[in-house]
Amino acid sequence: MTSDVTPMTFLSLFLPFLAALAAPALVKRFGHNAAWILAIAPALSFVHFALMLPQVAAGGVVTGGYAWVPSFNLSFSWFIDGLSLTFALLITGIGLLIVLYAGGYMKGHPQQGRFLSFLLLFMGAMLGVVVSDSLLMLFVYWELTSITSFLLIGFDHERAASRRAALQALVVTGGGGLLLLAGLIFIWDMSGMTQLSMLVRSGDILRDSPFYLAALLLVLGGAFTKSAQFPFHFWLPNAMEAPTPVSAYLHSATMVKAGVYLLMRLNPVLGDTAAWQILLPFFGGLTMLTGALLAIRQTDLKLMLAYTTVSSLGLLVMLTGFGSDHAIEAAVLYLVAHSLFKGALFMVAGIIDHETGTRDVTKLGGLRRAMPVTFAAALAAAISMAGLPPFFGFLAKEEIYYALAHGNPRAVLFTGIAILGNGLMFAVAFAVALKPFLGKPVKTPKHAHEGPLLLWLGPALLALKGLTIALFSGIAHFYISTPMASAIAGEARPVEISLIPHIGVPLGLSLLTIALGIVLYTQLSAVRGLIDRTFRALGAGPDRL
Image 1: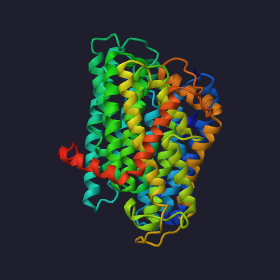
Image 2: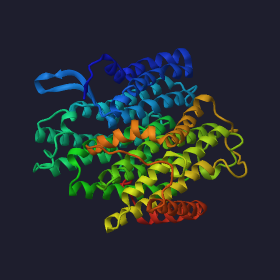
Image 3: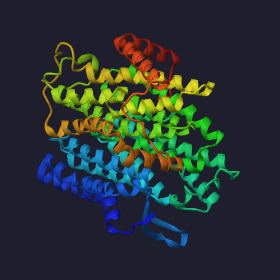
Image 4: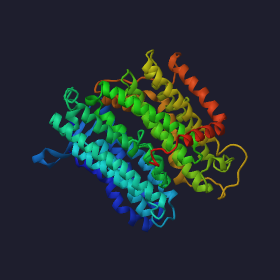
């Protein structure tokens, strides 16, 4: 463990907030090109955290901070291990690309400065969540993500749908935050610790407490609302009322994964119990299926992707709580893969909407010649989402089946859920990546053409990253996957899977998933109609209630 009290880490945490203050003035002076200047803030933070990779990969942990309220043992402190470092790199790295994307997407908007300011505030809040060592600091940043997401989702505040979605997200995630606060107070009282760096090494002190179940349920309340687990999943697709840069950032690297981060962070002290291994897989599996079925029901590109995010979050929660060997490693691989392909696909959906005037997949077609770069980025990201080689999503899917596929009835059940959910997501991935681009050209509200550099740079780089880290998986595992898995498990967990296929059950299940996905894709209209009729017959869902 290394103590870090250098001002640079402190500054790296506050750079997004400083950039947020400067955003309106810079946009007023430089217009949409201000995005290039504002992107320097996340770029510097990314570089600072990237420089920690060798130390963390070698087993080191960086802690530090400043006394806040010494009489209550409260501090402004950070705890950077493999888990928090991976999240910090995703938040700042993808955040950098989103800022640039927002510069192009919101070009000419009279409130672009305000929008970029809110976006950078949101980035700073999420960065604080994942590096916080102090329990109180974690909660403050946790609630700040709810407030800043409220401002972003309701950005088009003159529209009733935007106001409703923003208020709904604030109520659900803010209410869950109050549950989390109660859970953190329980944990503080049960352990006597206010620092996560100490808590994760405390062994069974929480599991042995008579208040363990109460603390667990309160923490799950906070995590499930934030990461849109059933029955709290409805706020996330409604948040698509936000401009596309928000959707891309929210779904790939930030707020919706905060609940998953919390569960992973507390796994060493709350996990490995019957309650943990029952509740997380049950709600995660139910969320995975619900999200995947609702995704294939949609025709709006953003809604299709939003519901697959719900499904993916369910898969991550299911894996985090499953309790088998390699389940944690599978969760790590899928989290990284999902961040890359989902960020790219959301930006692609935004480009299509921006350049054609519609994002209804049934009203699009033949765009591949008009938008070749966007098509290439969409196809690459969809291949990773579908779990096909040679992209990182393939490694994640193989590890998922390796972790789940065992002979007992519980494993068979959750393996079946994973196959069905992944098959549905396969179909949605290629529906988003192929339907708008292939076939005969369709007349669209705007004359279709390729977007400017600021729009396609982000999805192209994220799609390319999904390929390169798969091709050089040994390096990615050494610096990212293994340190992250070890931090979640509380013990050494080397990740070794590569692109070289190994004949066995996981590969067979992958082939079964691909076959299911192809069938669903070729029969997409019929499947969409069947699922739509089924959900309508079920009546009002949680959103209506």
